[in-house]
Image (cartoon, rainbow, N blue to C red; front, side, top):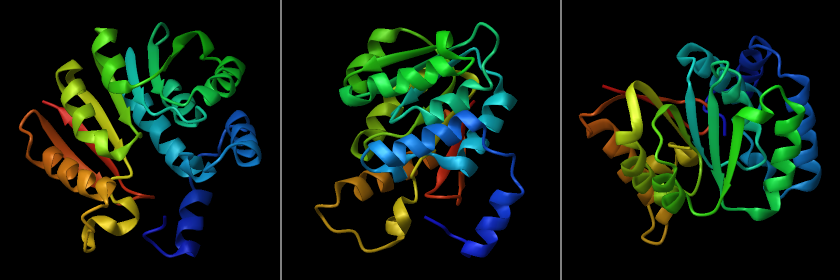
Length: 213
């Protein structure tokens, strides 16, 4: 999804840090073998995730929605030396694919995979986080927020992906469009919750940055 002309978007990408070779390889294999490859964060957003993580320099990261592991590897670039990243996904078929690329990176030992329903797994982890990235099933975004907001350390960052949902958030919404309805509720929640401050960035499919007060 592009919210600026494609030629200008190409210019933006061309003047952004190069995509690491390992992530280029992961992208190629995802497009060759995995359904819905457009779910990848991709070069530009991946470099943004990496930059934010490096600025935060987190000791602990939680990612909800692993897919093939691209965004986890980007976020891991900012981890402290003994930091950890916990990533949750419900798709059993992707576990080995993810692990292969995690172990090919310098961060393999720091990345912990969890398979199953994130609403059940998050309470079991009993951890707090400096950085959280939500990029999973949209109808559960509000539930994920309520599960993690008190586990987000003071000054910690919550990143929420796909919050513009291909522009559907400003269109007439059908009653059965549960994902768009959920995102409208979620975006309102992030704006109004007094525990955080929020900026919504109109890049790719929309990325919100929220900071715990």
